[in-house]
Length: 198
Image 1 (cartoon, rainbow, N blue to C red):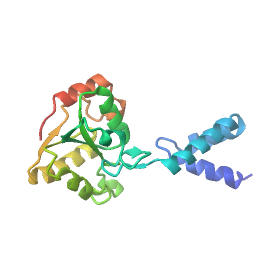
Image 2 (image 1 turned 60 degrees about the horizontal axis):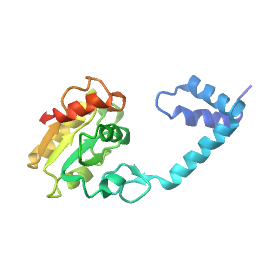
Image 3 (image 1 turned 135 degrees about the vertical axis):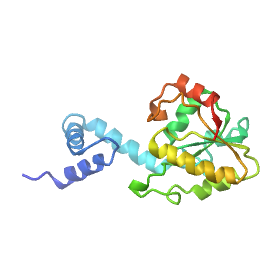
Image 4 (image 1 turned 180 degrees about the vertical axis):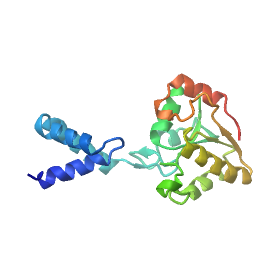
């Protein structure tokens, strides 16, 4: 017996989430449809509302409901410091430390040649335009300490240094192979305080 087409589409959609394989996607779909249809409706409504209202900040590229996010709109932030992160979750981790008072740029990914993701896919030109605006003096490359994150930081370091910018990287208090999203705030704060020139 084949699954109904709508159920099959739901399973395929759930498989698009990180860490969700075919079996987990099928279990989630059955759970939502069999046991918790109200949660399924809330999930669908929440997704639709987010898709309608959430956009990228025109300045830093993070997710927001406005043209400029709350951080970019804050006149008390230090515009001479620009912290580059891979995704909005990493930005939030750094913000929770309260150790960085500059502005951000969110790449929405990292270099990954094996996955076909290069500089053009991450819109590095947009970052370079932002970093070389004459206001930014230091760029903190806070990409994750994974192979892809390190490659991204190395590439950006070369390009930004060639343009006369001071480039730093958080200290290695964050474990190698670690993702900022899963590191405790104290470790991230210490890593930012101990950053060094690249």
